[in-house]
Length: 263
Image (cartoon, rainbow, N blue to C red; front, side, top):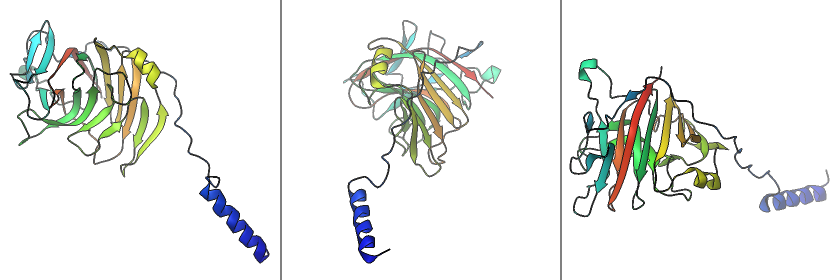
């Protein structure tokens, strides 16, 4: 090739790169077909008796049972120092039933106000020497009374960890061993979520955790799909807990908490 042609080819190549023509644009994640929640299995184990907080441990100033549901509330007069949790510890010592869960399908319903956020912890560990006596770290199913992305219910947050929002609402995500987040599909978009979520009302949750694969379902439909291959964030087993967030006064309620342990 002549020198003049070489120079011309090089200039054209640089221009293509500079104006984005040298490489194909990244394709958006694949939009997935809606996935319905699995039918409820028989003989789920109840974690809440609907009468009192037997089997749960939390700040007695903030947690109670009202009208058959768990009620957590902070006020200006009764605040919490940092995030605080109602932790399932298990009432059935005589039956030797565990309070640490590995693979499972957890079902419950929640509602809360919009002044602050709450959460459902799972595969979590209880921390010592924390801001209060009821603090955990681990996977959190976000709980909010909001409908506008991205600050809505059901994304996965790494409570007290370094991963932040591990899987945002609607995403199918694979987190690699090196901590890279790869979004491989979209399960639900904002308009559909806004129709699905029940503002100021009860919302039904299913959390499926098997191995390193976690799925969240909201009101009958899958809203996140998360595979965690990162040893710095992956959680394989732990306790279940319910959150009251530090900061602005808030309330959150939970009912019909039940679980099916899986192989």
